[in-house]
Image 1 (cartoon, rainbow, N blue to C red):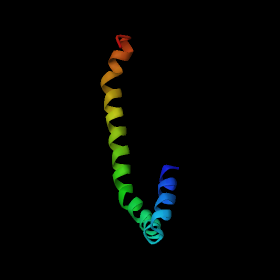
Image 2 (image 1 turned 180 degrees about the vertical axis):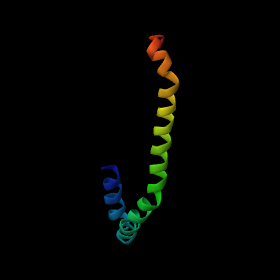
Image 3 (image 1 turned 90 degrees about the vertical axis):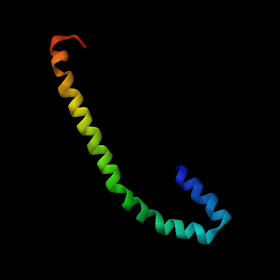
Length: 63
C-alpha cells in the first residue's frame, strides 16, 4: 500500500518518471528475488541448526 501511495505522489509530481518507475519496478523485483530466496534459505538452515543443538535440552526439560 505504501508503494502505491508513493507512486501516486510521484505521478502527481512527474508523470513520465512515474511511468518509467512503473515499467522498471518489476525488473528490479525480479533482480532482487534470488536474494530474498537466499535469505529465506539461510534463515531455515539457522533454525534447523538451533533445533538440533537444543534438542537434547528439550528432551531433558532443562530449557
